[in-house]
Image (cartoon, rainbow, N blue to C red; front, top):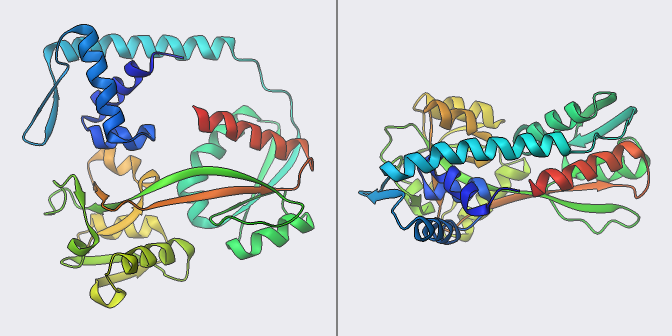
Length: 295
């Protein structure tokens, strides 16, 4: 694997943000800063200009970025060339999860898993968290993804990704230029919220309440049933919202939305649930996930 410092540098240089790089790498911001300082000490030169809350590459930083891009591409090419081909796994794998988990946390994973195992018939079954465990136990689905931990007997539990929740706003919104924002500041603006009957909506409202902000204190302009609908509403200027960071990659690249960290932070995580030793297809998914999470 390529030098960690080089990967950290490349991510900061690509995003031009220490905060966003830390989120993308699942690191703390001080850890990212430390890696960059080590690299700057190694080259004995500054790689970034950090002034007026903006991050820019120096002339030396631009050179390092060009080499880093080539080096990391070569590493990826080498790993791909040496990676053992996945064993043939055929048949059907049925995965049960709620729409928010599939939409935000599993979309890329399942896409890449299907590429790795083209002979496997992957089927998705939408269900709420409370429905998943009985479906796994009865064999209706092979693997379930749930947002809450469980101590169900005779089931195998595997932690999944932790996803950071962020505030989204139109690029010209007063909050867009902030590095982070506390919940109290959200009450000053129209707020687009997730249906509180879903687990993520409930999580957000519990977070608000824990920081002393009741639902009544929010200026709720809309309550919608999906993150895609929420993003569309925020892009249209109908308010700000809290969504998973993993759900807005395309919008950030296109510049149609701005993301601001929450302080204190809010995370959402999920767990895979399966029957131990039940099927080769289920084990293939869990093994693929373990490697995927490390990468």
